[in-house]
Amino acid sequence: MNATLDMLRTRRSVPPVRMTEPGPSPEQIDTILTLASRVPDHGKLAPWRFIVIAGAARERIGAVIAKTYAADNPEADAARLDLEAKRLAHAPVVVAVVSRAGPHVKIPEWEQVLSAGAACMNLVVAANAQGFATAWLTEWYAYDRRVLEALGLDPREKLAGFIHIGAPEEIPSDRPRPDLAEIVTRL
Image 1 (cartoon, helix red, strand yellow):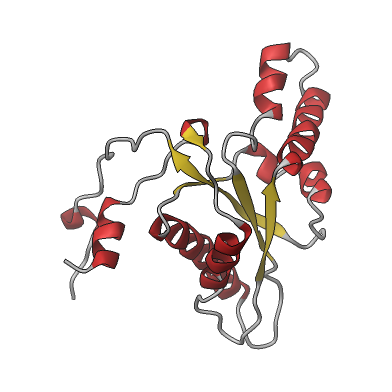
Image 2 (cartoon, helix red, strand yellow):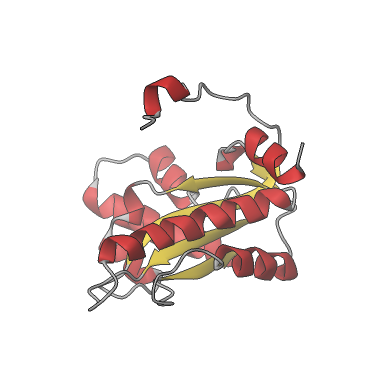
């Protein structure tokens, strides 16, 4: 079997709380992001960009997440605020994939959004191919403008996902996958 097909057949998401060091080196991150950017991109717009969150930045953005949660949930206890503060702290590296899709005279916005999703998946596959575990997550804070502003997103930008990257403590067992007979139509 082709190594790429084998990797895709066995790929699993690993919850960030089950990730540990080592994370990718700066050189490995550059390779991962280079490969992530090699996706279909009608019009060569690059309707996405990447924000690498590593080291102390994970805790700094986590504090913003916790503060935002506390502002909206004044009844939240210390344990919940600690959980919110650690949202990006489990994996050694988190890459935020930002969708810059917008109106264009020739390229439908939907195609631009799909390109951002493809960049997320290429990022996941490139990291997995280097032996790292990944999880592509959003959660509530991916849609909160206060958190997005802290990450430096323009008001027109949206977050396609946070890709958590690290070493797996263990590979989870596979989950049920769709039955092709239920999702495929042949004409």
